[in-house]
Amino acid sequence: MTGSAVIIGAGIVGASCARSLAMRGIATTVIEKSASASGTTAHGEGNILVSDKSPGPELEMALHAASTWPRLAKDLSDELGDDFPSIEFEPKGGIVVATTVEGAGPLLAFAEKQRAAGIEANELTISEALSLEPYLNPAMSAAVHYPQDSQVQPVIAAEALLASARRHGAAVEQSIRLHGPILNREGALVGILTDRGDFRADAVVIAAGPWSGDVAATLGVTLPVLPRHGMILVTSKMTQRVFHKVYDADYVGAVGSGEASLQTSGVVESTASGNVIIGSSRQLLGFDDRLRVDTISEVAARAIRLFPFLADQALIRTYGGFRPFMPDHLPLIGPDHRLSGLWHATGHEGAGIGLGPVTGELLAAIMTGTRPPVDPAPFSPARPSLASSLVRAA
Ligand SMILES: Cc1cc2nc3c(=O)[nH]c(=O)nc-3n(C[C@H](O)[C@H](O)[C@H](O)COP(=O)(O)OP(=O)(O)OC[C@H]3O[C@@H](n4cnc5c(N)ncnc54)[C@H](O)[C@@H]3O)c2cc1C
Image 1 (cartoon, rainbow, N blue to C red):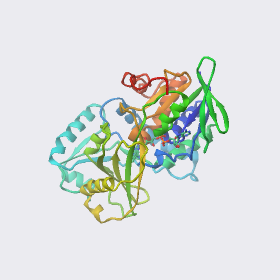
Image 2 (cartoon, protein in one colour):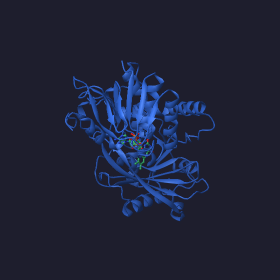
Image 3 (cartoon, rainbow, N blue to C red):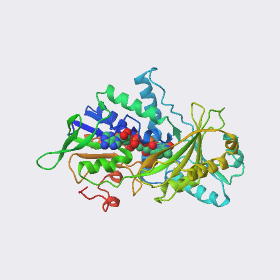
Image 4 (spheres, helix red, strand yellow):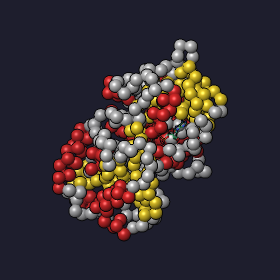
């Protein structure tokens, strides 16, 4: 039985795990090297998507997330009260658009497969698409509406989850340095050494996003999490002209691809504050965080192809972040089979905002031996697709 846990990383995944564990009475401490929610959670968008996922375990998780976020948003709001900022949960739905003749067939075939897996994916005529999104480029070849997609403000959501975790007894230590593992005589992990002393716990959970490989190495094991860079553009505030999350059909290919080279797609959405967020790119470059002009212009061109009015808008900033990329495209959630006492909640790549809370629930269910929200096996560190990448020595 797990009575205590230390979680390394206070992004949305660590915050979700802290809340789920603390709510089950597990004495939980989160340690964060910097400030809470300042990692990848602060450098992406806040989409909670089913539309970009192929049938399989990640989609099962996404469907669970889609059905539980509305309740979670309400629970957090009720619990934290009016003084806490809104997490801006918006069940706005998504629209995926094929911008080329060749793109229509694959988009409609993908939607068909998703419908068979339980997703609401409604094919739209061009005039139906334009009635939902009047500023869309009418020169599209196909469009599909996904009513289950939604959006949240990721930093506020992570802070709200962390605030709730604290109310359930969790402690959060920020600006702290991890020095190494505490092992018992049998070689099991029983805590961590930091610049603020020892933190002993039954479970040590790595939730360090793209830095999870470094944290694992410090604790003595390897982890194949890589940073996959992504860039976002932000326009000045405007009267609302984008009403759903709208993206081009190439996005699905970019999400599922393991290519190291640059992949871009047009992803456009409004925020509650009136700015339009434009994404996104994917590139495996290590932790190189330079903002590249070629990437910015390619992303902008794709967005303009979707919404021509964007060509006349001002950008106020552009930023980048590192998605925690796994070689087999599935998050890593559960106990490490190589080092007793070590657990993982990481590797969500471009879906960690949406899947953070269900990850916390899954981790807590495995730890407490209760019914998991989804089948844990596909996310297990012991899964066959990771056998060659998970060796003991760091
Ligand atoms: C451009 C872009 C767009 C995205 N859009 C979306 C989207 O629309 N929807 C979606 O669901 N996801 C999206 N994502 C992905 C999402 O942001 C990530 O999957 C998610 O934020 C991962 O959360 P995390 O808590 O695992 O990692 P992080 O938020 O990175 O948190 C990890 C934390 O661990 C801390 N840490 C690292 N090392 C240590 C250490 N040694 N000791 C203590 N603490 C440590 C870090 O400081 C950090 O705060 C996007 C990402 C990018 C880059």
